[in-house]
Image (cartoon, rainbow, N blue to C red; front, side, top):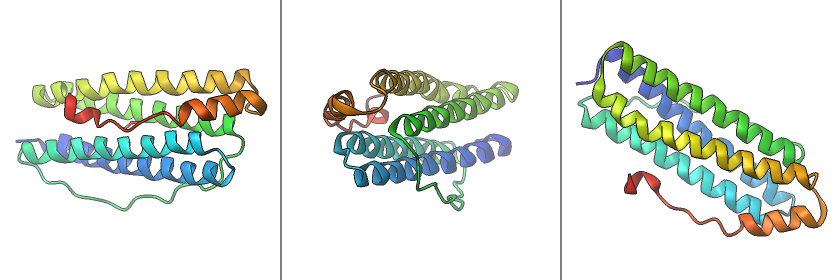
Amino acid sequence: MLKEKMENAINDQINKELYSSYLYLSMCAYVQSKGMPGIANWLKIQAQEELTHANKFFDYVHERGGRVVLKAIDAVPVEFGSVVELFEKVLEHEQFVTASINYLADIANEISDHATRSMLLWFIDEQVEEEAGVTQILDQLRMVEGKGQGLFMIDKELATRVFVDATQTA
Ligand code: FEO
């Protein structure tokens, strides 16, 4: 059975994952309107991934006999500036999520909730990958100053991303 403190913190995390999905979907809509279908594809898949993260926490709470309480999702921004600025915001957001996952791990440690600690290892590893992937894209975008032929090539490359539900293979 989940302790209340852990349950509340995971419920907050479910909200953050759903917010993340909404945020990336908003970014997707923004770049789609700017004529960058490959980057839009990458962001749409990112939004889908966030839903799988929310679901993984959702199922875990029930598995441990807890209760999921869904809260309102905050409104997301709709303007993101240049494509470099947009990816800076993606990285910033992923760093925020990493801090939030680490906070959950701190609580699990504090109350000796070993099962939650074990479940969180997947998310800790996932955040390393998330930040590394976004940093790589951001570096490339900066290299081409977010424009011209270079941007065209990056957009083509990001068009090849396909959705994989990594929570199902964990
Ligand atoms: Fe659910 Fe992108 O972290």
